[in-house]
Structures are given as C-alpha cells and as structure tokens.
Amino acid sequence: MYEREFMEGTRGTMAVDWEERIDMQRLRRERKARALERLQDAELGSLLLINDPNVRYVTGLAMTGGSGADHYTLLTENGDVVHWDTADHASNQRYNCPWLDDIRYACPGLGNVPRASGHPGARDWLTDKMAETVYTAMTEYGVADEPLGIDVAGGGLVGAFESRGVDVEAGAGTELMLDARKTKTRDEIECLRQVAAICEAGFQRLTEVTAPGKRESEIWGEAVRELWQHGAMAQGGYVTSGPNTWPKHQANTTDRMVRPNDLVYADFYNIGFMGYRSCYYRTFSVGRPTAAQRDAYERARDDLYDVLERIEPGATTDEICEGFPDEAGEHMDWYDAEEFWQMTTNHWAHGLGLQLYEVPLIWRGLSPEYPIEIEEGMTMAVETMQPADRQGVRVEEMVVVRENGVEVLSQWPVEEITRVDY
Image 1 (cartoon, rainbow, N blue to C red):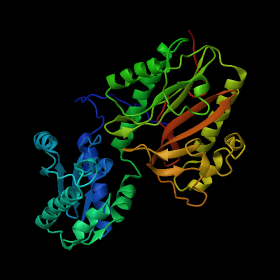
Image 2 (image 1 turned 90 degrees about the vertical axis):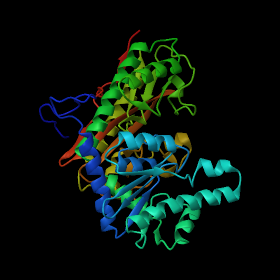
Image 3 (image 1 turned 30 degrees about the vertical axis):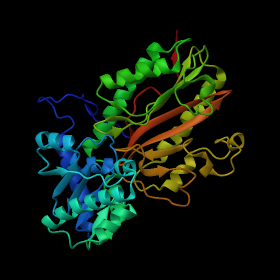
Image 4 (image 1 turned 45 degrees about the vertical axis):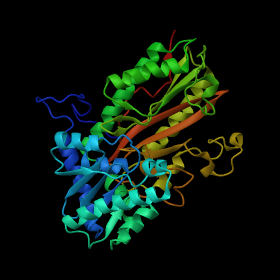
C-alpha cells in the first residue's frame, strides 16, 4: 500500500494564499491538454462533446444535467474551444468564465426538447439547426474539411453533419475521451480525496443520529444535510437497515424504523465535489454486533483487501478479479444464479472521476474475457458484501493507483464494524 508523505492529503475546501491546495486553473488546463493530445493523435480535425462529464472535462463548466444537448462543446485540433449553452447559462458563462473565449447560444437537437415538441418536423429542424451551429464554427476555425469525432452520436445528428459534407467518426469521440479521462491529474486526485473526507463527515453524522426508532429516511436526511454543508452536491446514495440490507432493498432508503441489533449501511455514491464522484460504503451495528455480523464483516473486509493488494501498474483486470469471491463466496446458489455476469454490483471495482463509473472495471463477470491493464493514476472504488443471518454487510474503499500499489483515499476505520451505541 502507498504511504503518504508528511502533510500530503486533504487541506480544505476554501481558497487560501498561504498554501497550495487544489489549483483550479491547473486542473482545467491539464484536463484540456489531455483531451487535445488524444484528439491530435486520432487524426481528427475537431471533437464535438455532448456528454456532460466530457463537456466539464474540457471546459471546466459545472454540467449538472440538463434537458439533453442544450449544452455542447467543440474542441479543435488547434486547441480552440467553442461552447454552446442555453440563453441564461451562456450569458452567465460569458461573464464568469474568462478562460472561455467563444460562448454561443445552443439549439437542443437531442434529448428532452425535441422529444417534447411532439412533432417529427420540429425534431428534425432542431437537430439540423444544432448541426448548423457546429458546422458554422467548424468553418470559422478551419476544420470543416477534416473528420469530426462525436461522443454522443445519434443517427439524425450524424446525418445532418453528413448532409453538409462533414466526415463524422461516430465512435472516435467516445473512445478518445475514455482514454483521456482514465488516469487522473494531481488535482483530480485531490478532488476525490476531498469528497472522501466529506463522506466521512456524513458517516460521523450518521453515528450521531442512528438509534432504535429512527427511520432510515431521517438518518439519511441528516447525513445529506452534513454533506451539503461541506460543499458537496448529493446526487445519489442511501441508508438502509436490518432486513433491507440483504439483499439490498429495491427502494433504497425507506421509512423503516431501526431496531436494536440491526445492521445499518450507508452508500455515499454520486456525492460530488467539483464534479468528482464518490462511491463509499460503510456498515454500522446498532449496539453490540453479533458473532455472525462480525464474521460477515471480516469476510467482506478481507475480500476487499485481497483485491486491493493485487492492484498495481501493469497488473491486468483478469488477474485482479480473482481476488473477488468465487461462486460460493458470491452466494450464487442463494440468488439462483449460474454465471458471474448475473451478479452485477455485488463484488467489483469501478473507476471514479467526473462520473460514477469510469475505466477501469474489475469484475468476474467481464474481466476474464476482456482484460485491460491497470495504469498509475487510475482511481477507483472497490466494493464487497456478505450476508449475516438475515442481514448483510457492505464495505468499500476509494483508491488511486500509485507506482507501488494503491493509496486508500477513504479513511473511515475499516478494521472492525463501527458500533453505534444508544
């Protein structure tokens, strides 16, 4: 495991002049440079980005979801950036985002606006107008005669570009951005370390309010309040308890009241800091844990750290996934499952960044047949689970791959199940 140097780690969310923290200008500059390098290597003249995390990666704009293609960005091989957005957003961006020189009004040619129009002709017009806005910019920046990559390539949009003589490489944009984003810069890693610290504030609040008679929804509400107070954007997650912990309850957080000897676990996933997403499980016992609960927790923790010890640069995902439980350890007979692909989300590792799921994915259901190599700078969440009588435990760590193993970004105690007394 990676050992941190003195003073290395989370330093706070505020901007200060007396120490270096997350350098937002460097964060934007280095992300754009990575995307541009891949674009130039791909022999494309420009790249149209529609997917929110890709737009944010190149522009630094806080894309938090919209009505579908009401914001999109063009990156040219010369490093020019043109961004289109809704009227209010574009007007604010022109004032607040001086690093962007060319911001224009968007025409939403994909997603909710065309769908809501209720008219095939209107949908065609919106798609064509969107292509026209981009083609005009491509002409102005001298890349209209070169191939265009797109990260979200609907058939109508591709056809609208092709009718203007544009050579569209529909799959190139997606692969290009996946490659650019798969390893993280120092500031991206610090954003993930910071969101892990914020999640720990949420776990602490959970321990303070969990007690018999408290509803899952009340506990989750208090935890989310804590997350927001620390500057996070909570776009996912849940708290579940007792029999809702095995199998995981389909409604996630419910109005079930916690009872003595319950297991409670929280999944702080899609908690964002500067757009960087968490995935962080911890399990709590309401009162003294039973022997079965302790044993289940130890199995889940040991499975987790068996996987972590296998992760290093050059290792491949087919090798690493062998650290996850086999058929018996997955309790596949209980699920009446015969193949690992049927056990999605129970035991795996997935990349973290501006999206909850990024490269790499380490999973018995996929990795043996389609392995990829682990690289230094990849960030991921590794998660495991085990049943305890009629309840279950889950545990997860957020890590970054270093030259000699992984650095664990999550710091809530993991050796033993956290006991909540009341």
